[in-house]
Length: 188
Image (tube, rainbow, N blue to C red; front, side, top):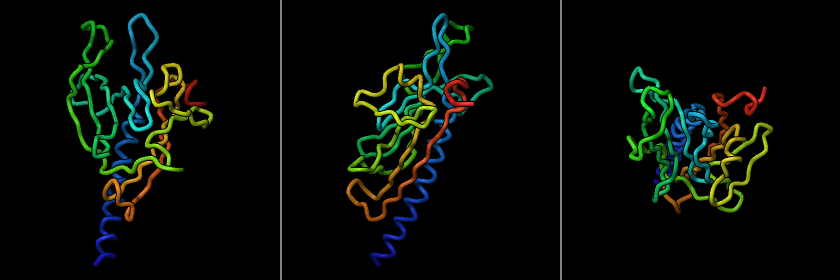
């Protein structure tokens, strides 16, 4: 009975981690800079931490108007991977430049319990330069200058039944490029 239960949990974790990785990869691939009137564009990554990333993207468009969204992928207190979105506000009106509402428009669970980083297990998010070098992420996150150089994000998801039950843990790792960034940052 114990083996059957563990096999079911392993299957569930494998399915959930695969679905979560597909969704997270889709969001990261859609990352784009946010144009600013009279200034340099804001980097595609607004914030880059080990267990949270906030980015700008054109994804999940709900109307014919092509408006960007701000998306945060982060862990909640139960270590579930959560996607939070904020809608764009064109400012000034008719300018084609956007700021983002301070109030989120949607929140959804992308994946269940993500194992914490321990020992040699990598963090949920690792930031990669175009030459493949991984940046070391300080606890305060990457600086604006560092965020401008990121060409890809490596996502390492270890899903398990609970924060302490590792018997049915499943790990997926994927390095996701951001093709909407300027060519000089994503290679030839």
